[in-house]
Amino acid sequence: MDRFQDYLTAQSAQIPMLAFVVNLLLAAVLAFVLSKVYVRYGSALSNRKKFSRSFMMLSLTTVIIITVVKSSLALSLGLVGALSIVRFRAAIKEPEELMYLFLVIAIGLGFGANQTLVTIIGFLLAIVVICVVSTAKGVEDDQNLFLNIVGHNPHEVEVDAIIPILTKYCTSVKLRRLDESEERLEVSFLVEFAGFEKLNQAKEELLKLSRSIRIVFLDNKGVS
Image (cartoon, rainbow, N blue to C red; front, side, top):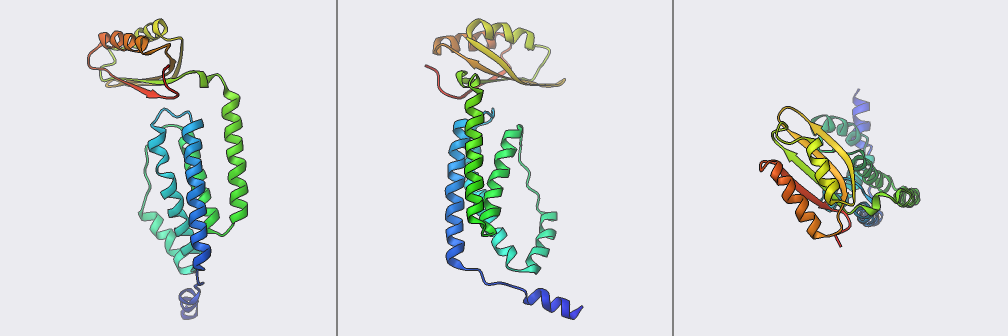
């Protein structure tokens, strides 16, 4: 047992500073590029610009953790105990957000393990796939706004009353998400307006259903 403990304390490798700094810079650059790709090609209803701001810090943190942990067997074993105490909790509402977070962590893992070439090639292939799949959709790119309607009294506001108003003023309407309970109704649409006048008319008519509802327009491409 004493010999095993001596092995754990003595088993520590020196971290090359130049390679460590280069890996940090490369991870930051790739995470920055990924954030721009997510804002441009993502389709999540949340604020994509705000969500993507965490990409760089997450990738750098992962690089630091993996670089330090791989230098010592004792630290790698201690990381298991640390992860059982610290838990990362984030409001992930769509699988796309989780996919991008995993890609950011993969960037940090790759550079932290000094797998520079493999990480860069894998990242480039992932970006190509994202761009191709997003371009292939085509149809959804024509819609220019995400509309989120929240009502705290579902008995006053019903989806059957919302849809006719949207079809009256929008050139295109697609239901993206519907969450309904006894206390709350939240419905999200992907819509397209011909201009600001139609948007204001739709907003005023929606507010007539109930003054307690909250209407949020999330810009996707901009209203002409």
